[in-house]
Image 1: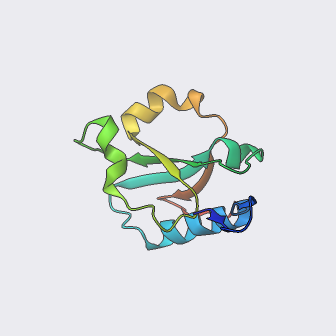
Image 2: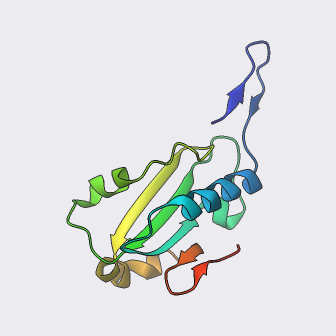
Length: 117
């Protein structure tokens, strides 16, 4: 998470490389059963992140019986050094709305393993 010195008004925020490396590490350690793809989008994908930016993560799963708003609670993102917004979609849901997420940088695709981005 961001670091703030008590004697300074400067807020230090992790750089993009630190955030993406933390996401790669998280993907490497996660249980991949039922997971088809993991990627990120938004300011980190576009390159216009800044102090206060969160990491927007999208996870595509084969199936999920949980309501949409509870799906992100299935994983612990506390090792990512910035706040994380996670969006979990089933494969069927993703097919219907993938055009909405044109800037996704895929980090993991189940058939291919981990991708370098």
